[in-house]
Length: 202
Image (cartoon, rainbow, N blue to C red):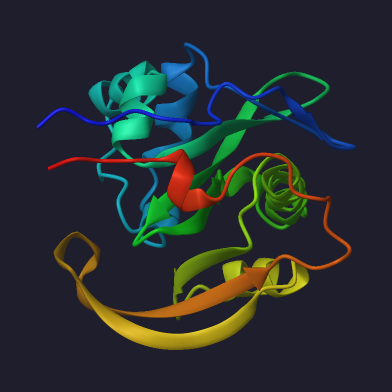
């Protein structure tokens, strides 16, 4: 059945930090394949395919606002180095069970430099400033200590653990859920609550 497309923030303005620009993805398929065709990265994600091929990159880059709304993606940004505009990762805000969820990845060559914290932190600030979302959740495999540190730095707190069936990630995996509630230090809300800004039929 057709998707009921409503408000989506995928075309929002660029987000800039000291070292990074969070911008819409562009026609940079070879760079995307070079970053994501890496099991050490992919094994810590829930949905990205492996091997990650040129076709996968083309499909990821071809998503327009309507398709993103159908997939419940509220906002997607490529993460690029400000000085060269080179792609190094991506960050998404998507809806699941009427909750806003954060997902991100950074290419392995750029690990250990604080880019995930910098990008996700700016992204969260933007999300709280442009919506009335009161809470953002995230989930990571429990072995992913690096992402746990990122989420803790950003003020996320553990809310529990559960198992998922992930045959492409080796079978049953344990997931730790984190929540980050809006605080008085966050920008004041500006638009609509999550349940009013995205819809799906079928």
